[in-house]
Length: 298
Image (cartoon, rainbow, N blue to C red; front, side):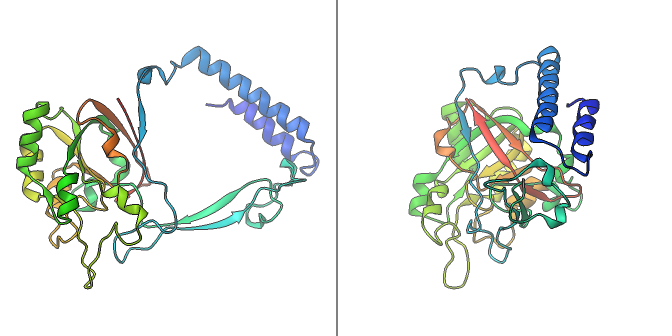
């Protein structure tokens, strides 16, 4: 944390003389703050990178753009520019009111509009369970967990409606051993590659029905009752198959207090077992979920 006293000095410096202050004085104040923070961190914080030393980091998050596929009927992601950093002549003393920021501003700023379940995102239990917790209440310890990858990509390429079954789980365990305790079990159907082809990710037919892989509800019931898991993951827009109308995978998982992470990327680059994943979930109060940054290492 920055020193409140140093931050106060920065703000007072900006406001002095009707905000007409030189870049040099502001940067000097900011530099003093940075030095103080650096000294404070050196004295009291362990290096955050140490647990990852020698590890391979993998970003499991798609870049969110205005044309990223969404669930049929859901609003698309929108980004409206509110202010753009001046290329020349800008100064921190030209802040003024945020409401008047425009061309020539010292800051770059956008307004975002999207549904909670947009891009790579998390489903909190409340999304499909009246008694489930909302996203900000998911314990932090439950968001850094082992990840197990069950690959059904070959089958999904031939059959877009295929589901991950209980037999797939047992076959996986025959090769890799019991699923890790407190893990996120992810379905890798190879679906992320379809983002390169317009319409292929939602894969809708003439009637608007999606044909995408998902978890068999019976397999989810097996996972929540007979295995120690915390979450499910998929590389599609839903842990349910696209053609589902009952959403049994959601109801079985979220109804049991588990969460889900959907539209994951790069699952094929992870080992079937042995990696750890961190879900950077949002914390807006009462949320049913939201876009998140998902990072794995092994």
